[in-house]
Structure formats: structure tokens, C-alpha cells
Image (tube, rainbow, N blue to C red; front, side):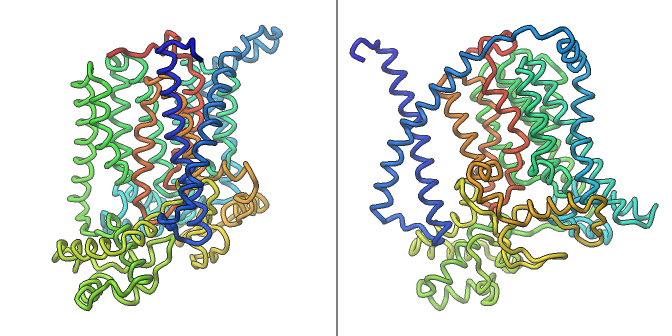
Length: 557
């Protein structure tokens, strides 16, 4: 060690710092998440808790650095391709020549039996509300208008022609399957072009074709599938931008960047906010091409605003709902009212009850803000926002830990690996009552009706959606866990950062920004971070890309 150069010592210290920061946050997530899961509260004044954080941070730092070394050795020691027998080689060459069509057909064939099993598809998560908006010609901006028109318009149109709601839902489901299969096919064509090993590409294809979380949302009417598809295309554009100077010379890549960015923003409000925050980062990272970056991002934002504004005007869509943006403050006030009512003066109570009734406050549940949030009085709030903001601030100054725990309880599933998704436990919906698990909605809301063509497979997906067993199996449970998936991405990011592979980090930017936005949401569900599953083959491909390859020469400066 004494003979180590100053440069090597600097690298060692930098590596310790990166691993240490990662390990600190991971230790906090494990310990805080465990307490939230068991007792629904974290006492940050508990000295023993911080001692455990320190001990785990030290242990994890060593383990993380060891894993990094093993990964480096594994990639360096990957065997060179050995020539295969001519017959096998010919099969692979034929498959490569027809990879686009074969990938597309393989994905659809994997999803088709499940579609038949759950026919007409998973019509759930606000589906009925979106359909009713079109059927009644009464629109609001509560849901993305683009998706409302696509989903509701297809169901209403097919129903007029065939008198069947199920057929309309099925047509939408098939359309979404085709679009997502097309997006995944583009992903694998891109990975093939970038010389990612065939075995990894094949494994990724099988994963996207068969893994239950991917299949569930591909066959689900919620906007999450199309939103995540748009995000995936944007991530590919960002990887190309970070690794290839030619990105800015290609009309196709620039067009895809604008269109995918627009679609992402049109399909989810948090997509809009994440894209806006991403812009200054891209301008900083692309100093040489900042004018082009600014032009492309402005085009995407302007396009989104024009489409949304035009639809809102044409449809006379109502707006003015605040509870979605205020879901965390509403939950914080409700928790404070339940556990520390003495901090509210008589005047404070009167102000609070103007926007949240006593009945609404009594419905507080730690893991889900919907029961209280849906009873929030938007009209009263709009009359004097400053007054209610002042109340929220006064109570928070008195009980900051209650506020923190209220927020953590609705978000810890996004960062605690061993979370069991059961935020709807006890809630009765159209066709069942949630019991010990609410991983996925599963049902078909009215006016649709489940008409399974393969009942045994339908039962498999019912159990995957509504039973807790998969989240109790060691290791396997992490594949289904939003929290575990987040830490896998964070680990990969830290490893690439440690190796100085900065040009590969571009796609992580919107992923982490979107993850930050969902922390401010009403609860933790896989649907809000579906990009962790859809994007897995891309990020595994990033991990094995050779930085010295001609196709991946990073830009300097």
C-alpha cells in the first residue's frame, strides 16, 4: 500500500466514498423500512438505530466494493466466442437476419395465452372513470386526456359497432400489446446493433415475454404500460445521446427523442415534471451541443402543452383539482390530527375542517392517502390557499416527526426491498375484496366482464396478483419488489460511476427523477415504477457494453 501512487490512492478513496454513500442510504432504507413495516413509525431520536446504521454502512461498504471487483473480473474474463458447429451457426445467422420479426412474434405469442386467460384484459385502475368520461361527454383533467380518448373512444366505438363492451376492451388490449411488443422489438434491435451478447439479448427477450409483472401491465388498460413504453424509447435515445456524437446528426434519433418525450409527458403528470427537471442536467452534460439539446427539449415540452391545451379546450375539460398534488400534505395533516390532536388550536381545527371533514380525517390509513384525499374540498382550498398552507406549516413545525412518518408510510415500498404490497387490504372493489395482498388489480371493471378462455391460467394470475406468497419467498420476492428493483438500479449506477463510465449514465437520469416524483404520490404500487421492469434488459445491456467499442466512443468535454 505504501508504494501506491497518488493517482491510485485517489481512485481508492473515490471508490470508498461512492461505495460508502451507497451503503449509507441502503442501510437507512433497510432499518427505516423494517420499522415502518412492523410498527408504522421510525423514531429518529433512537440512538441505537443510528449505531446500527453506522455498523451496517461499514459492512455494506466492504461488500459493495468486493462485488464491484467481482463484476469487473467477470466482465474482463468473459470467454471469447468459440466457433459453433455449422448447423447451429446457420440457425443463429438466420435468426439474426430475421431478429426483428421473430422478437415481435415471440412476445405476442408469449402474451397471447394470458390474454385469452384473462379476456378481455385487465380493465382496472381508473379504467371505468376514463370510459365514463367519453361515454358521458364530460371530461376532466384528472386523467391524461390523450389516454382517456384512446381507451374510452375505442370502447365506445367498438360497442356502437358490435354492441359488446368486452370486444372494445379486448381491442384496446390488443392494440397496447402490439405497441409494446413493437417497442421491445426496437430495444432488442438496438442492443443487437450495439453488439450486446446474443445470450443476454435472448434472456432479456424471454424475461419480457414471460415475467408476470411485465405481462400484467402489458395486458392492463391503465396508462402505465404506454407511459413506460414512451419512457423506454426516451431512455434508448438518451443512451445514444451519451455515447454517440452522431445522435445530433440523425433526424431519426432527434425525432424519436421529441416524440417519446412528448408521449411520456402526455401520459402522466409526473412524467412532465421529471422531463422539465431533466433539461438543465442535459444542458450541463452536453455542453458542446447545448443548443441542440435545448431545441429538442423545448420542442417536446411545447408539443405536450399544445396537445394538452388543445384537447382541454376542445373537450371543455374541467380542472381545478388539487388533491393529487397535495396528497402528502393531506396525509401529514390527517396523521397529525389522529396521533397529536392537541397541537391543533380551536381556530386550527375550524380551518382544517373547511377542507377535511371530521369523517374524512377519521378514515386515515398509514399506507394509502386515497380515503382522506378523495374527500378533500378543492373549492374551499382554492378560495384561500395561503391560509391552509399556513396551517400545514404551523402543525409541521410542532410535529415534524409525524410529518416525516406520514410521508414515509406512503412511500417506503419504493425503497424498502422486503415490502409486502398490501395498501388496499380490506377494500372491496367490483369483483372481490383485497385481503393480504394488492400487488396488482387483476379484475375487469364494469362495463366489462371476465370471460376466461383458459381458466387455470386465469387462476395463476389471480394468485400472482392477490396472494402474498411470492413476496415471502427469499430472493424470488426481490424480483417482484419495487424497493429491491430500485436498489439494483442504484447499485448498477454506483458501479458505473465508480468505473468512470459517465457516458453510460444518461438513461439513469429520468429513471431516478421519476422515482423521486412517485415518492410524493398517494401510495406505493408496482404500476408507478413499472419502468424498473420494462427497462431491465436495457440496463443490463449497458452494464456489459464495452466502453472502448467503436460504437460506444464517449464524447469528451
